[in-house]
Amino acid sequence: MKVFILVAGFGTRIREQYPDIPKCLIPVRGKPFLLWQMGRLIEQGFKDFVLCVGYRKEQIMEYFKDGRELGIRIQYSTEDMPQGTGTTLGVARKFFDEASLVLNGDTYLPIDYRNFVEKHRLAAHDDGALASIALYPISMFGRSGHVILEGERIKAFAEKKQEGKEGDLANAGAYVLESSVMDRIPPSGPCSLEVDVFPTLANEGLLRGIRVEHGFIDIGSPQGLAELEKFLS
Image 1 (cartoon, one colour):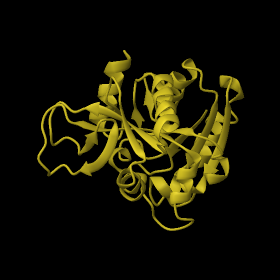
Image 2 (tube, helix red, strand yellow; image 1 turned 180 degrees about the vertical axis):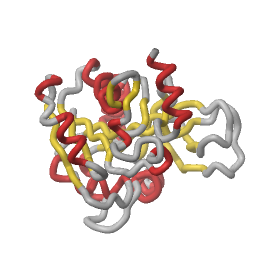
Image 3 (cartoon, one colour; image 1 turned 90 degrees about the horizontal axis):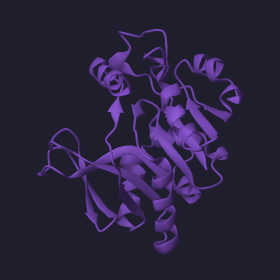
Image 4 (cartoon, rainbow, N blue to C red; image 1 turned 60 degrees about the vertical axis):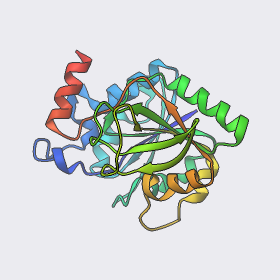
């Protein structure tokens, strides 16, 4: 299965601290963040990567090259001005020829991705699910929006301001998408997976939520970087 990692964004919250490198190359315990993220996936058997790059893309491509030194294959999808996660993935549509794992390139999610993928495959086989979202329980409502479930089917997405409770499930930023989801992404213009694509799939009963064992760590702030450093120590 291919892994698409969306690393095209600018990373405005952390740019003052690291003005000359893209967010995915910020050093964490002596090596670039993206190497930690990809390393976990490689350990679990994933070998085929597509990096969707934009801001300072030359630095990323120079560091990782074709992936041969890591024992994997890396291909690149490039864009000059990111317009949302859906648009970034849409630019990479020529690489999207089968169900694939899609991750954000600025969050670390320490889960068993093989198990996540297998659960999606079962959902796709049993009831035609086109996409699955990894969900984690939030410890304090208000930190994140949450999803409304019916069994494993995502019915809707609730905003932060809506009433919720401890233990509600939130988007962990990892997805498995069938290739037909690419037909839901317009060929041009801004598009967000989270805002424009997933709610439509939920309304059609084609979106599944899969509980995972851990929430993500966002490296977009000094606090997030410190949290990841501690986690990896």
